[in-house]
Image 1 (cartoon, rainbow, N blue to C red):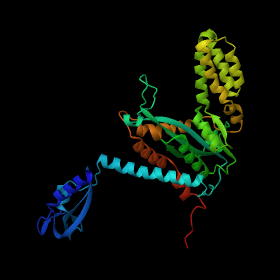
Image 2: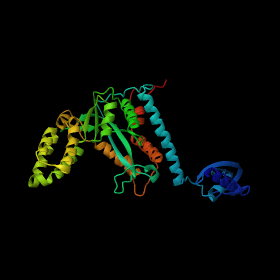
Image 3: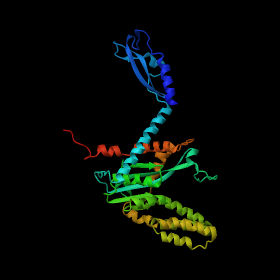
Image 4: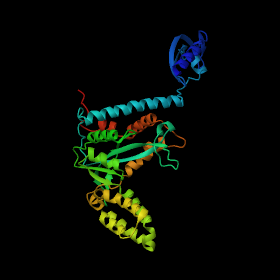
Length: 380
């Protein structure tokens, strides 16, 4: 329909080629002479349209003009919002397909990226997921967290890779400026795993001294890491763990009474030292039964299942990050600020395409290739 409408509009506009006599007034105050006809393609709500219009040239000022352009309001560059939307989604779809194709080639060892130079000391991957509001068609048959049980969002999985070579004067790690690169997808976890593994290989995961993965307690994250980065040091985000500890204190509040704050402070100290056994022992001394006991078992299961990833004192002694704030910031800036604004409801292909473009814009792959030594061919 758009193509048909564009063709009809093109014929309508071509009815007047814009010939206004052998000479017309030029903006400089002189006369411009007719020199022939020239084609021009411009964007409309129906797509690109090409018209042939009369062209005049002013010998005095050296400029050319077409009266028909001014009459149609084409004197400047203007793109409709719908045209920009279509172009962006088309470009994003091409970008997303290219990233997946490259990831498949890397993970299948058909393409072997050279390790980065200079090789960083530490490489991190921070992984998280966030919901994006989508149309009802995209959530049909899916369970949601709302009161009516309907899903209204689809999860996009995001990973950010960055490097670290230094610590500050207090011994805290410092992220290398401009070292972040992002991959994201709405596809299932196994597709995301391919993208993350390929990006990790490209960033030197098989060559760096220390590879670290940061994430919350979501099982899909650690399943992905175990399958694709078994050599990595895994760390659960400390601030998520602290939030779970606050939730645990609220669960036991009716038993703790006035001792709640002291109990919580002691457990936070246990957490900082990675003493998960101490946290669980201190919580299980209270005689709970029924639903409360089940809730306690679930709450403590988070800590018990992630205990090897919560050795925060040891991690910090090695100068490692223990927080995944960089990927949470990515969820807000790359995803949230563009795809989660008020009133937005996306199709999954459209959201995936825009996400691919934003990940490309936020990444530093171009600078990594072009600006570092040993990545350019010398001219003769």
